[in-house]
Length: 204
Image (cartoon, rainbow, N blue to C red; front, side, top):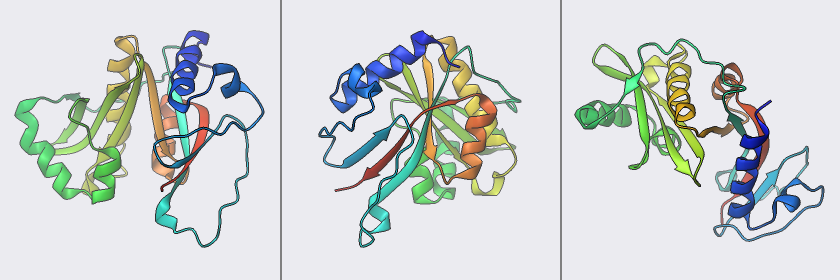
C-alpha cells in the first residue's frame, strides 16, 4: 500500500479539484459538484451508474482507472535504455506524433510543460512517457508508443523510467487509463500502481 503521506497528498488534490472536503471524498454518500462543464463521476468504491442508451459513445470517457505509486509500492522494470528527452529530440518526437493515431497522441503525448523520457529503437523514438505536475506533488504520467513497436514492453520501460524520476523528486506518481485498455492496465499492475479511484466523464 502507498504511504499515509501519499494518500493524504492525493486526497487533498482531489478534494480541491472536485470542490469538496476530504471527509466528503472519503464518505459513502454521493456528493454533487460542478466540474469543467462536464459530468464527472469519481468513485473510491464500487458503484453502478446507468447511462441513457441514446447517449453517444464518444461523449463518454471511462470507466477509467486512477492509480498511484510511491516508494512503498513502485516496482521498477527493465527500462530498455530510456533517457530524458530535450530540444535536440524534437524531430524524433514529431515523427512519433505523425506515426500515431490522433487519439493516441491526444491522450498519451506530452504537454509543453511536461518532463519526458523516450525509448529509441535505432533512430526511431519507439515510446515516450512524460509527466505533468498536478497540484504541488502529483506527477500525472502519460504514455504513447509507436504503432510499429507496441506489444514489446517499451511502453512499460518508458513509464518505469519517468515514474522513477518523479519519485526521486519527492512526487507521487499518478497513472490514469481506461479500464478497458488491457495493455495499459498491465503496465499499471506490473509497476505497482495501486488503484485509488474509478472515474467516468460525460462530455457536455
